[in-house]
Length: 267
Ligand SMILES: [Zn+2]
Image 1 (tube, rainbow, N blue to C red):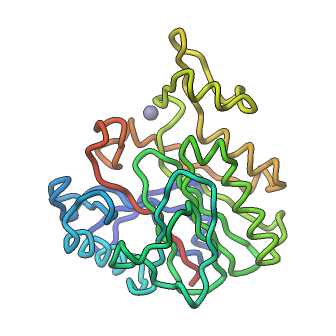
Image 2 (image 1 turned 180 degrees about the horizontal axis):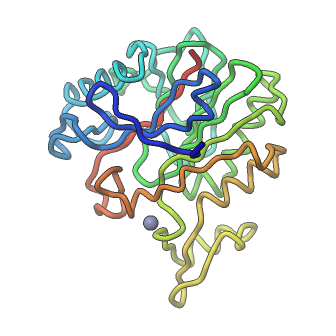
């Protein structure tokens, strides 16, 4: 079984991890094809915060909701500020930001819930989407880990929330690293290198003062350091920069692009 495969449903393409599907974790990492947008012509921009036409973004979300079989009104989103704070999604904040960006959960980069049928949805263009799930229960998390969040150990913080707030046993957690800028393309300068002193084994030098930074490796290391079994960590191994025809890439498109959504809920 391949870690990561593409699917076509309701006219849109998205990637899934078959191993999560068999756990009744409905999820997807949306491709950019076949949507509506004023920002990126006829593409599936999923984010409301990037200056696109609101009604078109909502139409794209409805199309994805049909494909993945969820109620758009229950979709819960967060503002994503490149920090390492995590919010718990409860009955009180279900649906935050589903169709109105003003209602999104502020100042956090990860959402955790144990409510069934509540899709957690975060937005990406090169940063790393992580889905974490309890193989023995209903708790799931979706995390936004760019370089700042990764250096802030946000993956480990999400695992701590799952353990401390939801009673999940760490050896039951399965983790999936979605499409994002890969170690082939993510060159950084000394400012990132200097901020990452604990993680220099995740860098490969290129030209003087520049390195390729492996965001997949740093997140894998942090998850393993928290006790997640190596065999329970999957990676799509899909670089958004290399595959910019299929996924939005902030860097490949000089910041003028849409966002893919990473969505997950327990059926
Ligand atoms: Zn690449």
